[in-house]
Amino acid sequence: MDNRYSRQILFKPIGEKGQNNLQNKHVVIIGCGALGSPIAETLVRAGVGKLTIADRDYVETSNLQRQQLFTEQDARLGTPKVVAAKKRLEMIREDVHIIPVLDHVDGVFLEELAKDADLIMDATDNFETRLVMNDVAWKLGIPWIHGACVGSSGTVFPFIPGRSACFRCLLPVLPAVNETCDTAGIIAPAVQITAAHQSAEALKWLTGNEQTMREKLYHFDVWHNTHVEAGISRLQNKACETCGESPTYPALTQIEGTDYAVLCGRETVQIVPEPDRALTIQDGEEIAKRLGTPYTTTPFFVEFYVQGYRCVLFGNGRLLIHGLKDRKIGRKLYHQLVG
Image 1 (tube, rainbow, N blue to C red):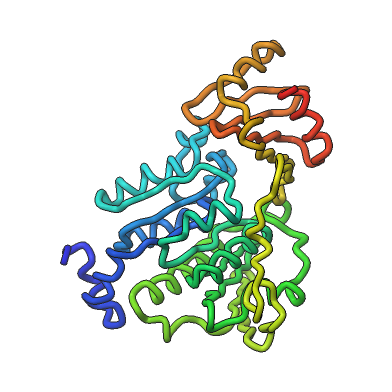
Image 2: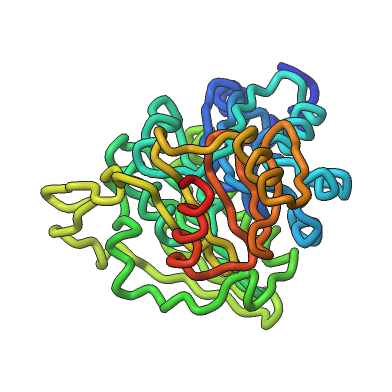
Protein backbone atom coordinates (compact mmCIF):
# COMPACT_ATOMS: atom_id res chain seq x y z
CA MET A 1 0.00 0.00 0.00
CA ASP A 2 1.25 3.47 -0.91
CA ASN A 3 3.08 5.12 1.99
CA ARG A 4 1.05 8.30 1.48
CA TYR A 5 -1.88 6.62 3.28
CA SER A 6 0.17 5.14 6.14
CA ARG A 7 -1.28 7.40 8.84
CA GLN A 8 -4.82 6.77 7.68
CA ILE A 9 -4.22 3.01 7.63
CA LEU A 10 -2.99 3.19 11.22
CA PHE A 11 -6.45 4.42 12.18
CA LYS A 12 -7.95 1.05 13.15
CA PRO A 13 -11.52 1.56 11.89
CA ILE A 14 -10.07 2.04 8.39
CA GLY A 15 -6.92 -0.10 8.24
CA GLU A 16 -5.66 -1.68 5.02
CA LYS A 17 -9.03 -3.21 4.19
CA GLY A 18 -10.81 0.13 4.39
CA GLN A 19 -8.06 1.81 2.40
CA ASN A 20 -8.40 -0.79 -0.35
CA ASN A 21 -12.14 -0.16 -0.35
CA LEU A 22 -11.59 3.55 -0.99
CA GLN A 23 -9.58 2.90 -4.14
CA ASN A 24 -12.53 1.10 -5.70
CA LYS A 25 -15.24 3.62 -4.80
CA HIS A 26 -17.08 6.16 -6.95
CA VAL A 27 -18.53 9.27 -5.32
CA VAL A 28 -20.77 11.81 -7.05
CA ILE A 29 -20.52 15.36 -5.67
CA ILE A 30 -23.29 17.78 -6.64
CA GLY A 31 -21.86 21.27 -6.32
CA CYS A 32 -18.24 22.38 -6.39
CA GLY A 33 -18.35 25.53 -4.32
CA ALA A 34 -18.02 26.14 -0.60
CA LEU A 35 -18.86 22.55 0.45
CA GLY A 36 -18.03 20.65 -2.72
CA SER A 37 -14.44 21.82 -3.03
CA PRO A 38 -13.25 20.78 0.48
CA ILE A 39 -15.23 17.53 0.29
CA ALA A 40 -13.61 16.70 -3.05
CA GLU A 41 -10.14 17.54 -1.73
CA THR A 42 -10.63 15.45 1.42
CA LEU A 43 -11.85 12.42 -0.54
CA VAL A 44 -9.04 12.70 -3.09
CA ARG A 45 -6.42 12.94 -0.34
CA ALA A 46 -8.06 9.97 1.42
CA GLY A 47 -7.66 7.78 -1.66
CA VAL A 48 -11.13 7.55 -3.23
CA GLY A 49 -10.66 6.17 -6.73
CA LYS A 50 -13.25 8.08 -8.77
CA LEU A 51 -15.12 11.35 -8.33
CA THR A 52 -17.81 12.79 -10.56
CA ILE A 53 -18.15 16.50 -9.76
CA ALA A 54 -21.09 18.45 -11.18
CA ASP A 55 -21.47 22.23 -10.99
CA ARG A 56 -23.09 24.77 -13.30
CA ASP A 57 -21.04 27.81 -12.32
CA TYR A 58 -17.67 29.48 -12.84
CA VAL A 59 -15.20 30.96 -10.35
CA GLU A 60 -15.76 34.54 -9.20
CA THR A 61 -13.72 36.67 -6.82
CA SER A 62 -16.41 36.49 -4.12
CA ASN A 63 -15.91 32.70 -3.99
CA LEU A 64 -12.28 32.86 -2.87
CA GLN A 65 -13.03 33.67 0.79
CA ARG A 66 -14.41 30.17 1.40
CA GLN A 67 -13.98 27.95 -1.67
CA GLN A 68 -10.57 26.45 -1.10
CA LEU A 69 -9.65 24.85 -4.43
CA PHE A 70 -9.69 28.07 -6.43
CA THR A 71 -7.24 30.91 -7.11
CA GLU A 72 -7.32 34.54 -8.19
CA GLN A 73 -6.31 33.44 -11.67
CA ASP A 74 -9.34 31.14 -11.84
CA ALA A 75 -11.54 34.12 -10.94
CA ARG A 76 -9.87 36.43 -13.48
CA LEU A 77 -10.36 33.88 -16.24
CA GLY A 78 -13.86 32.89 -15.15
CA THR A 79 -12.80 29.25 -15.15
CA PRO A 80 -15.67 26.79 -14.62
CA LYS A 81 -15.45 25.44 -11.08
CA VAL A 82 -15.35 21.81 -12.16
CA VAL A 83 -12.51 22.51 -14.59
CA ALA A 84 -10.44 24.38 -12.00
CA ALA A 85 -11.17 21.68 -9.40
CA LYS A 86 -10.11 18.84 -11.69
CA LYS A 87 -6.80 20.57 -12.42
CA ARG A 88 -6.07 21.21 -8.75
CA LEU A 89 -7.16 17.76 -7.56
CA GLU A 90 -5.00 16.01 -10.15
CA MET A 91 -2.04 18.05 -8.89
CA ILE A 92 -2.78 16.70 -5.41
CA ARG A 93 -3.04 13.09 -6.62
CA GLU A 94 -2.17 12.05 -10.15
CA ASP A 95 -3.94 8.67 -10.17
CA VAL A 96 -7.41 9.91 -9.20
CA HIS A 97 -10.15 9.67 -11.84
CA ILE A 98 -12.05 12.97 -11.95
CA ILE A 99 -15.10 13.42 -14.19
CA PRO A 100 -16.04 17.13 -14.38
CA VAL A 101 -19.63 17.93 -15.36
CA LEU A 102 -20.26 21.57 -16.28
CA ASP A 103 -24.04 21.54 -16.36
CA HIS A 104 -27.30 22.00 -14.53
CA VAL A 105 -28.29 18.71 -12.86
CA ASP A 106 -31.88 17.54 -13.16
CA GLY A 107 -33.41 14.20 -12.20
CA VAL A 108 -32.82 12.25 -15.39
CA PHE A 109 -29.25 13.53 -15.67
CA LEU A 110 -28.34 12.76 -12.04
CA GLU A 111 -29.81 9.29 -12.30
CA GLU A 112 -27.43 8.64 -15.20
CA LEU A 113 -24.43 10.15 -13.38
CA ALA A 114 -25.06 8.09 -10.24
CA LYS A 115 -26.02 4.75 -11.77
CA ASP A 116 -22.70 3.13 -10.76
CA ALA A 117 -21.91 5.38 -7.78
CA ASP A 118 -21.42 4.26 -4.19
CA LEU A 119 -22.41 7.58 -2.62
CA ILE A 120 -23.85 11.01 -3.46
CA MET A 121 -22.59 14.12 -1.64
CA ASP A 122 -24.84 17.17 -1.27
CA ALA A 123 -22.89 20.37 -1.88
CA THR A 124 -25.68 22.32 -3.50
CA ASP A 125 -27.55 25.40 -2.29
CA ASN A 126 -31.21 24.72 -3.02
CA PHE A 127 -34.10 22.47 -2.02
CA GLU A 128 -35.05 21.52 -5.57
CA THR A 129 -31.72 19.83 -6.29
CA ARG A 130 -31.78 18.11 -2.90
CA LEU A 131 -35.18 16.64 -3.72
CA VAL A 132 -33.67 15.33 -6.95
CA MET A 133 -30.74 13.79 -5.04
CA ASN A 134 -33.16 12.29 -2.54
CA ASP A 135 -35.29 10.64 -5.23
CA VAL A 136 -32.27 9.33 -7.15
CA ALA A 137 -30.71 7.93 -3.97
CA TRP A 138 -33.86 6.04 -2.96
CA LYS A 139 -34.54 4.80 -6.48
CA LEU A 140 -30.97 3.50 -6.89
CA GLY A 141 -30.62 2.38 -3.27
CA ILE A 142 -27.51 4.40 -2.45
CA PRO A 143 -27.01 6.91 0.38
CA TRP A 144 -26.59 10.65 0.07
CA ILE A 145 -25.02 12.90 2.68
CA HIS A 146 -26.80 16.20 3.19
CA GLY A 147 -24.91 19.33 4.15
CA ALA A 148 -25.97 22.97 4.31
CA CYS A 149 -24.43 26.08 5.83
CA VAL A 150 -25.15 29.79 6.07
CA GLY A 151 -23.82 32.53 8.33
CA SER A 152 -22.02 30.71 11.15
CA SER A 153 -24.20 27.60 11.22
CA GLY A 154 -24.38 24.28 9.44
CA THR A 155 -26.45 21.10 9.24
CA VAL A 156 -25.40 17.54 8.35
CA PHE A 157 -27.22 14.23 8.01
CA PRO A 158 -26.61 11.00 6.06
CA PHE A 159 -29.80 9.83 4.34
CA ILE A 160 -29.60 6.04 3.90
CA PRO A 161 -32.39 4.17 2.06
CA GLY A 162 -33.98 1.56 4.29
CA ARG A 163 -32.51 3.03 7.45
CA SER A 164 -33.73 6.60 7.83
CA ALA A 165 -36.60 8.85 6.91
CA CYS A 166 -35.89 10.61 3.64
CA PHE A 167 -35.43 14.32 2.95
CA ARG A 168 -38.96 14.67 1.58
CA CYS A 169 -40.35 13.36 4.89
CA LEU A 170 -38.61 16.25 6.66
CA LEU A 171 -40.07 19.04 4.52
CA PRO A 172 -43.10 19.72 6.78
CA VAL A 173 -40.83 20.38 9.78
CA LEU A 174 -37.93 22.14 8.09
CA PRO A 175 -37.78 25.90 8.74
CA ALA A 176 -38.59 28.26 5.91
CA VAL A 177 -35.41 29.19 4.08
CA ASN A 178 -35.16 32.96 4.20
CA GLU A 179 -31.37 33.29 4.27
CA THR A 180 -28.66 32.23 1.84
CA CYS A 181 -24.94 32.88 1.59
CA ASP A 182 -25.76 35.77 -0.74
CA THR A 183 -28.17 37.42 1.72
CA ALA A 184 -26.86 36.51 5.19
CA GLY A 185 -23.21 35.90 4.33
CA ILE A 186 -21.08 33.02 5.52
CA ILE A 187 -17.81 32.49 7.37
CA ALA A 188 -15.29 29.91 6.25
CA PRO A 189 -15.17 27.99 9.57
CA ALA A 190 -18.87 27.14 9.21
CA VAL A 191 -18.13 25.77 5.74
CA GLN A 192 -15.12 23.77 6.89
CA ILE A 193 -16.93 22.22 9.86
CA THR A 194 -19.91 21.22 7.72
CA ALA A 195 -17.70 19.75 5.01
CA ALA A 196 -15.59 17.91 7.61
CA HIS A 197 -18.66 16.24 9.12
CA GLN A 198 -19.92 15.29 5.66
CA SER A 199 -16.52 13.89 4.69
CA ALA A 200 -16.31 11.88 7.90
CA GLU A 201 -19.70 10.31 7.21
CA ALA A 202 -18.55 9.55 3.66
CA LEU A 203 -15.40 7.81 4.88
CA LYS A 204 -17.44 5.72 7.31
CA TRP A 205 -19.70 4.50 4.52
CA LEU A 206 -16.94 3.95 1.96
CA THR A 207 -14.69 1.98 4.33
CA GLY A 208 -17.43 -0.32 5.63
CA ASN A 209 -18.03 1.46 8.94
CA GLU A 210 -21.69 2.30 8.32
CA GLN A 211 -22.65 1.17 11.83
CA THR A 212 -20.92 4.28 13.21
CA MET A 213 -22.72 6.72 10.91
CA ARG A 214 -24.73 9.52 12.43
CA GLU A 215 -28.34 8.61 13.28
CA LYS A 216 -29.48 12.09 14.29
CA LEU A 217 -29.55 15.29 12.30
CA TYR A 218 -26.71 17.53 13.51
CA HIS A 219 -26.92 21.33 13.60
CA PHE A 220 -24.28 23.71 14.95
CA ASP A 221 -23.49 27.40 15.23
CA VAL A 222 -19.75 27.92 15.50
CA TRP A 223 -20.05 31.63 16.35
CA HIS A 224 -22.44 31.16 19.25
CA ASN A 225 -20.86 27.87 20.39
CA THR A 226 -24.06 25.84 20.19
CA HIS A 227 -25.02 22.51 18.68
CA VAL A 228 -28.04 20.24 18.75
CA GLU A 229 -28.96 16.77 17.50
CA ALA A 230 -32.47 15.71 16.48
CA GLY A 231 -33.81 12.25 15.77
CA ILE A 232 -35.85 12.04 12.57
CA SER A 233 -36.83 8.36 12.30
CA ARG A 234 -40.30 9.11 13.71
CA LEU A 235 -40.91 11.46 10.77
CA GLN A 236 -40.88 8.65 8.21
CA ASN A 237 -44.14 8.77 6.28
CA LYS A 238 -45.64 5.62 4.75
CA ALA A 239 -47.34 7.81 2.15
CA CYS A 240 -44.11 9.58 1.18
CA GLU A 241 -43.67 9.87 -2.58
CA THR A 242 -39.99 8.91 -2.22
CA CYS A 243 -39.59 6.41 0.63
CA GLY A 244 -43.20 5.36 1.24
CA GLU A 245 -44.99 2.16 0.32
CA SER A 246 -45.73 3.29 -3.26
CA PRO A 247 -42.92 5.65 -4.32
CA THR A 248 -43.34 7.75 -7.47
CA TYR A 249 -40.10 9.80 -7.27
CA PRO A 250 -41.73 13.06 -8.45
CA ALA A 251 -38.46 15.00 -8.65
CA LEU A 252 -37.31 12.71 -11.45
CA THR A 253 -40.12 13.73 -13.80
CA GLN A 254 -38.59 15.25 -16.91
CA ILE A 255 -39.62 18.87 -17.47
CA GLU A 256 -40.70 19.46 -21.05
CA GLY A 257 -39.74 22.66 -22.81
CA THR A 258 -37.37 25.44 -21.85
CA ASP A 259 -36.76 25.78 -18.10
CA TYR A 260 -36.48 29.26 -16.54
CA ALA A 261 -35.29 29.53 -12.93
CA VAL A 262 -33.97 32.16 -10.54
CA LEU A 263 -30.79 30.85 -8.91
CA CYS A 264 -30.91 30.61 -5.13
CA GLY A 265 -29.98 33.84 -3.36
CA ARG A 266 -28.65 35.47 -6.52
CA GLU A 267 -29.97 38.03 -8.95
CA THR A 268 -29.50 35.58 -11.81
CA VAL A 269 -31.98 33.88 -14.11
CA GLN A 270 -30.88 30.53 -15.54
CA ILE A 271 -32.36 29.30 -18.80
CA VAL A 272 -31.99 25.66 -19.82
CA PRO A 273 -33.43 25.39 -23.34
CA GLU A 274 -34.91 22.54 -25.30
CA PRO A 275 -32.14 20.87 -27.34
CA ASP A 276 -33.52 22.12 -30.66
CA ARG A 277 -33.56 25.73 -29.38
CA ALA A 278 -30.13 25.75 -27.73
CA LEU A 279 -27.76 28.54 -28.66
CA THR A 280 -24.07 27.85 -29.25
CA ILE A 281 -21.07 29.92 -28.22
CA GLN A 282 -20.81 31.04 -31.84
CA ASP A 283 -24.46 32.14 -31.72
CA GLY A 284 -23.62 34.24 -28.66
CA GLU A 285 -20.77 35.90 -30.50
CA GLU A 286 -23.05 36.67 -33.45
CA ILE A 287 -25.70 38.14 -31.11
CA ALA A 288 -23.09 40.39 -29.49
CA LYS A 289 -21.83 41.55 -32.89
CA ARG A 290 -25.38 42.24 -34.05
CA LEU A 291 -26.08 44.28 -30.91
CA GLY A 292 -22.73 46.05 -31.13
CA THR A 293 -21.81 45.03 -27.59
CA PRO A 294 -18.38 43.83 -26.40
CA TYR A 295 -18.03 40.11 -25.76
CA THR A 296 -15.46 37.75 -24.27
CA THR A 297 -15.08 34.16 -25.41
CA THR A 298 -13.48 31.32 -23.44
CA PRO A 299 -13.31 27.60 -24.29
CA PHE A 300 -16.40 27.11 -22.11
CA PHE A 301 -18.68 30.12 -22.61
CA VAL A 302 -19.18 33.52 -24.21
CA GLU A 303 -19.97 36.59 -22.08
CA PHE A 304 -21.83 39.57 -23.51
CA TYR A 305 -24.32 42.27 -22.49
CA VAL A 306 -27.96 42.67 -23.53
CA GLN A 307 -29.98 45.69 -22.35
CA GLY A 308 -27.47 46.20 -19.55
CA TYR A 309 -27.67 42.61 -18.28
CA ARG A 310 -24.53 40.46 -18.23
CA CYS A 311 -25.21 37.23 -20.09
CA VAL A 312 -23.08 34.08 -19.94
CA LEU A 313 -23.84 31.46 -22.59
CA PHE A 314 -22.29 28.00 -22.09
CA GLY A 315 -21.40 25.57 -24.85
CA ASN A 316 -24.44 23.36 -24.18
CA GLY A 317 -26.87 26.27 -24.63
CA ARG A 318 -27.46 27.04 -20.94
CA LEU A 319 -27.73 30.80 -20.39
CA LEU A 320 -27.24 32.86 -17.23
CA ILE A 321 -28.62 36.41 -17.14
CA HIS A 322 -27.02 38.27 -14.23
CA GLY A 323 -28.58 41.25 -12.48
CA LEU A 324 -32.07 39.86 -12.98
CA LYS A 325 -34.43 37.99 -10.66
CA ASP A 326 -37.66 38.07 -12.65
CA ARG A 327 -38.28 34.93 -14.72
CA LYS A 328 -40.79 36.71 -16.95
CA ILE A 329 -38.25 39.34 -17.97
CA GLY A 330 -35.66 36.60 -18.46
CA ARG A 331 -38.05 34.66 -20.71
CA LYS A 332 -38.83 37.78 -22.76
CA LEU A 333 -35.15 38.62 -23.15
CA TYR A 334 -34.32 35.06 -24.17
CA HIS A 335 -37.01 34.99 -26.84
CA GLN A 336 -35.65 38.25 -28.21
CA LEU A 337 -32.27 36.55 -28.56
CA VAL A 338 -33.42 33.29 -30.15
CA GLY A 339 -36.31 34.74 -32.18
